[in-house]
Amino acid sequence: MEKFVVEGGARLQGQVRISGAKNASLALMPATLLAPGTYRLTNTPNLRDVRTMAQLLGEMGVDCQLHPDGTCIIDSRTVTSFEAPYEQVKKMRASFYVLGPLLARYGYARVSLPGGCAWGPRPVDLHLKGLEKLGADIRLERGYVVAKASKLRGTHIHLDVPSVGATGNLLMAAVLAEGTTVITNAAVEPEIQSLAEMLVAMGAHIEGIGTPTLRIEGVSELHPADVTTIPDRIEAGTFLVAAAMTRGTVQLVDVDPSLLTAVLAKLEEAGCQLETGTDTITITMEDAPRPTDITTAPYPGFPTDMQAQWTAFMTLAPGTSRITDTIFHDRFKHVPELVRLGADIQVVDNTAIVNGGTPLMGAKVMSTDLRASAALILAALVAENTSEILRIYHIDRGYERIEEKLQALGARIQRVATDEF
Ligand code: EPZ
Image (cartoon, rainbow, N blue to C red; front, side, top):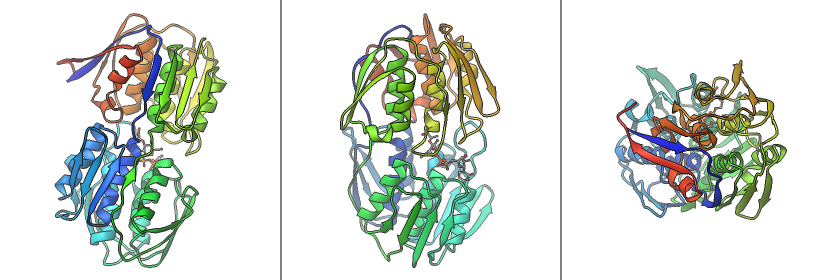
């Protein structure tokens, strides 16, 4: 096992390159199941979750080669298994993305129901109802979804909530269905837009990309395509908050500011100075932040994946801030750990009420899920004395070499081996 040891107090200064988007790669990689051939996915981030997806596809007979420069070469000509076993899916909910493409191309899939992150149950009912509407026979057998379809047929699917995963799975199923599929109340997250663009590059007919209404004309077959992964807007937001918390000046490069409008607006509201270029964002913060409330919402609203990081930020704002998560009502596992660092936070229903302004004190804390771990690192960067963050395998799921990127900005953070769990 490993932990981070963080000495608080360093101001972050300098430049950091943002990696490709985890949640784009995790959709683009299974899309290669839809057409046999060789694909070149550039700017793929070197993350634990990406390696997990490569391993899952590998066990299905798909050859995935991840190169250090971020190029991922995928050869899907020899798919030999149409199953996603519990051992893989329990590690990563996004494994469920293989369901749609397997069903569309092979007419059969046996995929374990996801385990996913630590907080709350995360259903997949919208995925399954949508696939049934497309004509699939869906059965639940001992923790597995067994899906069969001789041919999927186009239909109208309305999503009760704009689910990112359900939109991705149903898009990948509909592109090879007979006839027209219309998905209304679809997710418009950039990662889903990039999946739709890859499918179009593969020969799919999709209209309305980037809007909540997607119209898909099914085709009989698709062909491979090469794709460049979009920058990770959540990694970018995380580094922006890190710079703001340490009152530093940091320039993000290889980033797309247009994917972060809600976060940039809230950073300005909190008192940060921001300067954006085509693929850069420079942030400067000289004082404590102003208390700034946020409420998460589907894109382009404030992302739930930035909620924990914002909670850490508001512990520095003298006064009261209210942080409400409307997407995942119980995504507050980071709060008790922030309280161990001296924060004054109460969670009432799906709102964290932060009374900020009291300095944080270093302590030993434990990661519970990916974004909670990020929040703990941010808090440790400003806490007095030393903090230790355990179970950092959570952070490695979604951040590429985070301690190296932070060290390059002046943070005093070390990854050390530990037998503590
Ligand atoms: C994606 O998860 C992301 N993961 C999550 O990022 C992100 O937090 C989430 O979207 C919301 O933006 C990937 O892209 C791999 P949803 P997903 O389906 O698709 C409900 C991270 O930190 N829902 O959009 O699982 C669900 O309970 C991860 O990178 C149903 O009710 O999220 C939730 O309340 C964490 N039925 C809401 O929709 C369903 O069938 C949004 O979930 C599916 C979802």
